[in-house]
Amino acid sequence: MIDFRLDKGSGVATYLQLVHQVKQALRLGVLHAGDRLPTAKDVVAKLAINPNTVLKAYRELEREGLVTARPGLGTFVERSLGTASLVDHARLRRELGRVVREGRAAGLDDEDLRALFTSVLTDSFREETA
Image (cartoon, rainbow, N blue to C red; front, top):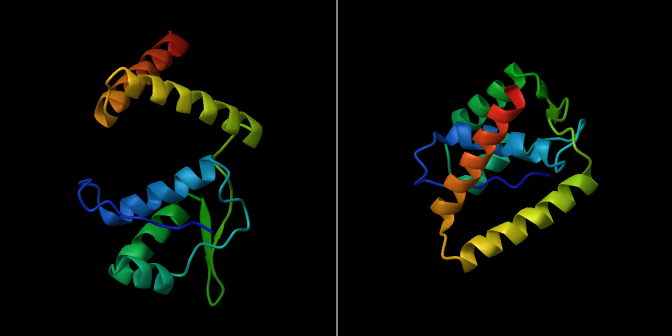
């Protein structure tokens, strides 16, 4: 089961934060086809947000074909987004953790690391599509 969190200072709409968290959980293998998302009522109680916000997020996920609402039963995951195995995820996570620790030792903060990662990701995409 996914445990939603909000970053009120992120500037990202609340419903989009929920959508992004579900997508991340799908990519990382935390959620699988058939898993049930928390009810809107449970999310509202935990995060103190408007029920329509949760419903909007779930509708967006449904529009993208990632979940299906089953009246009276809940909202269920239809498909995953991840293509790598959980073993690959674990190995890559360890490697990224090592790189982050090296970056911190070199004096980089979170924003520096994000910028560096984004730059490498962009360069990699350009190389792959060239």
